[in-house]
Image (cartoon, rainbow, N blue to C red; front, top):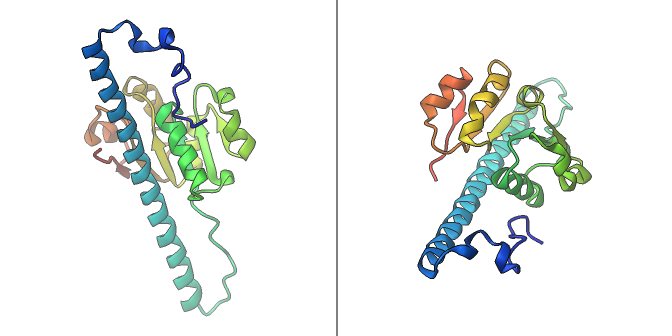
Length: 192
């Protein structure tokens, strides 16, 4: 079962749109399709971004090794990736990053209010918790996948506790506002 499947798909009376007339139901189906397309686009952009930064880091390390007179034996074990908020987008992003091999499970950190609901990630070796501060301090790239209504609380936790780049998927918030809330400049906000 895909993580985007609707568990009420075959139970018409439990579906959200069951009480709507036909015209409104068709409109809702289009909205659901647009939402799925937006999530897919967001995940594709994030995968490309992480893959590109990983490749750049590997090239820098390789160049440093070849140009250095000393014998550098350190290896690049991949970027540490964090996800704050694990709703539909956060879960799908984590799944895609792992399934495509963009990040190893040991380099993926997820902070969510209900880490006990992330058993499938925990079984793969992903660190799941409800500790935005620890995740912010630990990772190289931090994906904000929380709701706009949660950003004030999340930003209080993360203010002064972010070590890497912040990639924000928070809808309805401008880059300037997110920068102000986090008091941090190293933020990317894609346009979907």
